[in-house]
Length: 105
Image 1 (tube, one colour):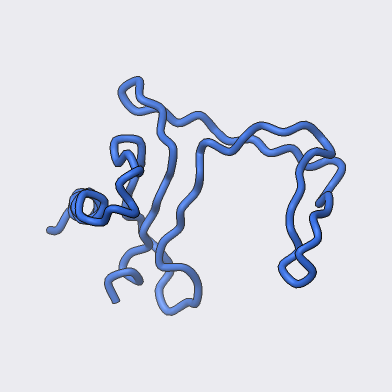
Image 2 (cartoon, rainbow, N blue to C red):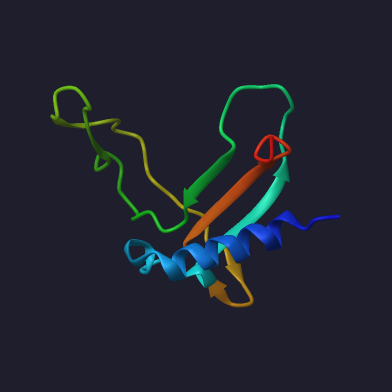
């Protein structure tokens, strides 16, 4: 049986070490895992979540409209919060999950 989590982690470590534009990524702060996904459905093969989003206060969450480029407030009540995920005392920056078997197909 193939351990996809280990294999994908090794692949990403190799890519980060070989591609200068990605050299800023600390793979020791990336939690990567393979998970069971739905069969025969549309959607993402993998997801990436930042675990280090800056904290915000209500009314201070802004976004840029793709069409107009205008910066607007998205919501008065929206507050960004990221969970703190640590492994062996080390805080993770990203959580990446690969949906199997869809990723392999």
